[in-house]
Image 1: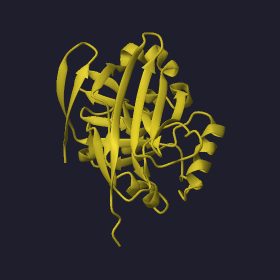
Image 2 (image 1 turned 90 degrees about the vertical axis):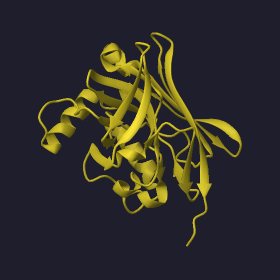
Image 3 (image 1 turned 180 degrees about the horizontal axis):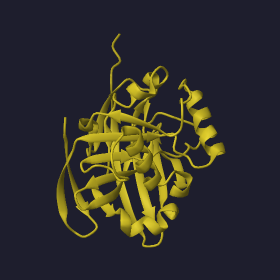
Image 4 (image 1 turned 30 degrees about the vertical axis):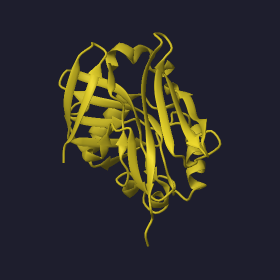
Length: 231
């Protein structure tokens, strides 16, 4: 199924986009110690370690959304702020997104957990080529509302994660596809950074990707509506 999204681009134009492929790159930390810390923090909530790194999970494109509120089943879900590559006919574009995930499901299948929650992403795009030379210096942050308090949840630069060029090359090779960039209509989440204080479950998630060289920011926020977990 195809997702219909609408973006405002840095060139001051609006574009409606049809997305038919959603790829979620996981375990993408460049530093092996940082990767092990992320594996350990997930192990603390019951998530098994990966079979190899990085991994490329597939989820339904219809899971993508740009909504201000999502609905989840049960209280054990959490967002993860990530850089997101959007492949359009005129090249690669960058936004910010949240790999919102059900941690109960992750305890027995990470792949299945990627399918169980909406994946909110921002409404604005930057052309990737315009920031590629300073990509590592872009700043990724997220806040959660926990017990009514807005709390910094994640913070790091993109130097902590594999570059999109490498992730795209690896994905294309593993899929047996020609070329080194994503097919048009593909969205790829680029991995996340560690959570300050460990993984926690809030009622609102706010995220940003900031460019300190220009002062620009890509942002999005959403409330989390918890539906009852009925046995």
